Amino acid sequence: MASEAPVCLIENAEGQLRPNQQALEILSAITQPVVVVAIVGFYRTGKSYLMNKLAGRNTGFSMGSTIQSHTKGIWMWCVPHPQKPGHTLVLLDTEGLGDVEKGDNQNDCWIFALAVLLSSTFVYNSMGAINQQAMDQLHYVTELTDRIRSRASPDQEDEVEDSAEFVSFFPDFMWVLRDMTLRLEADGQSLTADEYLENSLKLKQGTSEEDKNYYLPRFCIRKFFPRRKCFVFCPPTDWRRLSELESLHNDELDSDFVQQVAEFCSFVFSSSKAKALPGGAEVNGAQLGILVQTYLDSINSGTLPCLENAVMILAKHKNQEAVQKATECYTVKIAQKLRLPTDTLQELLDVHAACEKEAIAVFMKHSLKDDKREFQEKLVATIEEYKENFMQQNEAASRSYCLATLEKLAEPLRESISRRDFSVPDGHRLYLEARKKVEQDYEQVSRKGVKANEVLQDFLKSQITIEDSILQSDKALTDGQKAMAAEQAKKEVDEKEVELRRQQQKEQKQVKEAQKITLSENMAQLEKKLEREKENLLREKTHELKALKELLPEGVGKQYDDLRREAEKRKKEIETISKIVEWGVSVLHDTLVNVLSSTVRRFIRHL
Image (cartoon, rainbow, N blue to C red; front, top):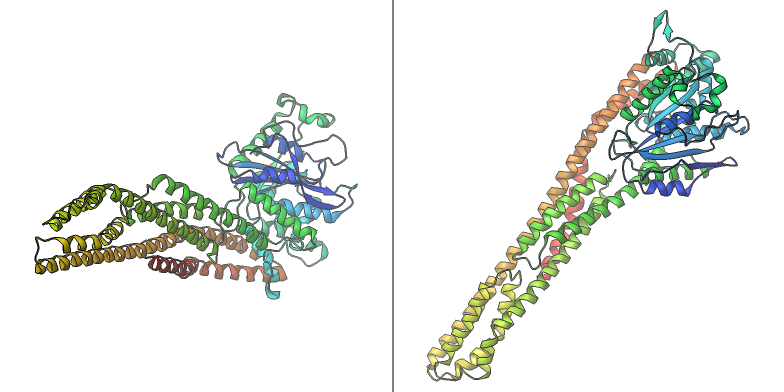
């Protein structure tokens, strides 16, 4: 769902941040993964112009033309992604930092933190070269540890390491330098924009206050944002025409600036990833809205936004949705494929298994961090209920059809009995022939279903008294022959009972086998999902470890000790990741065995 124009996502009124319900409704309708690009910087530095270009428009986000800040809070524009089908591009234009009229640095810190938390690409927009003043203005990055928690309740020992988890959730960092007039070079050598950024982020040793001010913002950028990119823009036009920027055509702008903007947009479109959670699960618009609400609830309640809490809240919504989608998949598919009554129970169970397999795949696609497997257990229990209901419907349909069929086929037999056609010498033989014809005709009827034998057995039982009466009145038979005929009739009834019990035992085995298939299918699909998540986590942790190792030699004092401890922790995490699959499958097995066993017990009692 695209929005025709930007809308305010987070309102900033009287120093309080609150969500705009209209914007949340727009997000709630977006089921596609979202690529979220947020831009942050000081007011009146041209942030909105770049965001309008990313939206493919000249106007949209308010730009203004005075020294006053125009954008208040965080504004959002949702547009179809120009290069990634099936994705929505969400552009977030933030309130300018350092607005003297606002006079509230705390408010700026929260705007900065929210932009980091919500985006998959974070664009920092500043004027001119990267010097110490520019770094000082970026002090917000050093305060992220005071604004965000990665774990709900970090141990005292791990408080320092809490911020080490940021990198798994933080966006890619892009620094845009506007109105740059200096050449990019160091020691007389020309530099690319990326080389210029990395050169500017080099750390230096020292213990003075000045050294710390130099070290800390650079250290935080390198630690929290290992994926970095830089773009340099020359002035777009004569300064006197800057107020008309959004109305100027490309041929009225500096050609280098036009090219630089095009390269910036192209890179964002091709390289910016979908917003994702640790482990790689992509976030859609509705889930982004949940994150917005969760973070603002924390801020307004006086607590720090917590990544772990946000993920758990999001996981609960996502898993409830996954169960619903999977259940809908199962019910729709089985309604399309199942024709009642089925000829055998196995036919129904085969259809069930095929539909269940598709449903499990839907659940695996949409579920997130169902570590205790409670939502997968809920799905299995729900599908089991549907299966049992279909089995009961199948039995009812079979019974109804068989009764109607047998009623019609036995009509001549009942009429002969009513006319006393068998109350003659040799009448018992005639009766047996007439009844046998009913049985043979009944056997020829197709798709009678699972209750065919039971209905026939009930019919034969209903004929016992009638047959005995005809037998006893047949004057063509001796008493000995009558006794033998009575014994034969009893034997046939007993044989039918044995046959019926065999069928029930067979069906009981089929139900148990179906449970094994359910269990193995759930475990197999979960194992595949966990293997993918394991690979994603391994990539993430390996990338984090590499970044820490690169930073470690440049650590100073306490930072060095912290980095070393974080690197050791990453190594241990990488070693334990391999156990994720084994542990997850084991939990599911123990959980589902109980669920499925109760289903078998109910079926046996029903028999």
